[in-house]
View 1 (spheres, rainbow over the protein chains, first blue to last red):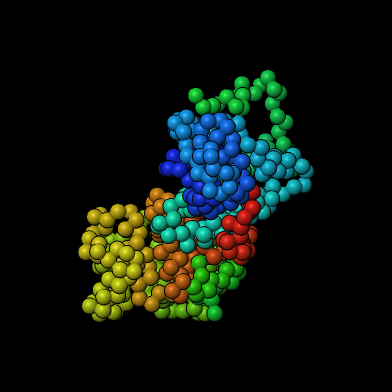
View 2: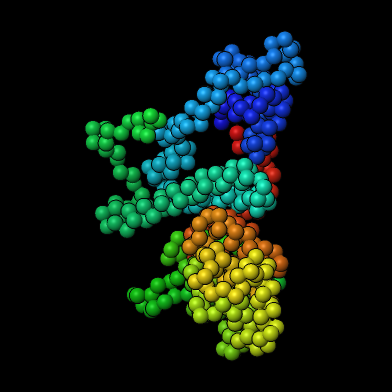
Length: 205
Length: 240
């Protein structure tokens, strides 16, 4: 979450005080991201240094100081809004790593392990859904934040379902079944892998 | 007393080498006012569980009880009456009768059960009002949107004095916002005292339930535990 750009967005509506910015930031993010006052003022100082924000120079550094966005700040905000966040390199996903490790270990019941993770994620989804049940039509920012989290967790459950299907399919394969216990296929040598370079695919143009 | 109770319910189709065990020693209790989701992949036995709970099929072994009565010990006509009076079904494809209006679809099960037409129509309109489709009561199914059709189907499933609501992928044909609206209504129906069971492969749908049980190869292998309320998610620093 870019606090810097969120503050620029709030200032594009008109001049504001630091404390006011903090309150509006928290309200605008469905109060899911708490922000301390120190963070607000440090960020404002940097924005001012970069010429994106200006304030009444004669006023003191206290809470009475009013900030406003400059033309350069408005341009910066417009560019940021249209720049896709970098999602080209897969995150180091701890759950994926755990399942991959489990596949290699003898004597691990992978289906049982997958179910333990699935249960945990579904329990979290139940909590978010209970939250959503209480969200009114007027609370669009909160609803959107909760939706995003529910979709993210749902993707994890679908991935776990896919793990189970792929393993079952492999178990049903006579060649794989003949090998006995769940045994990992050794990874192909580096040369055999596709020329896939994280950080390049889908990079913002 | 549970509205629905399954005791060691097993169901097999075929015999000998071709025998397929769809359900294997399933225990499940659903109380009035609560919604339970049965989550599992296709072929895990979800639909069989629902048809046994709805007395449309009998278990090979074990017992299914609705409101404390063992279904297999009831006479066929008694079971049929129980199905009409106490059990409501919601399906993915709505199953509304195309030649009947929304209100006629909803009142039909009551009329079949002997409720005078005037009283049945009044109850049906009340149910449609509660599901916010009252103004569409005199429309035919093909004049309704998918979300409206499913609301009518839920009204039909809860109209009168239904005690048990059985739903099979009820949001399958809907987009996520309409699906969410349907689940709000299912949950609201449960909160008014109905026991609900929804079977699904969809975690987003299952997450509306008070309890999620996981079905694999006909066996209930796991269940979610009650967790602290959603407020813990929003505590400062939570999830960071």
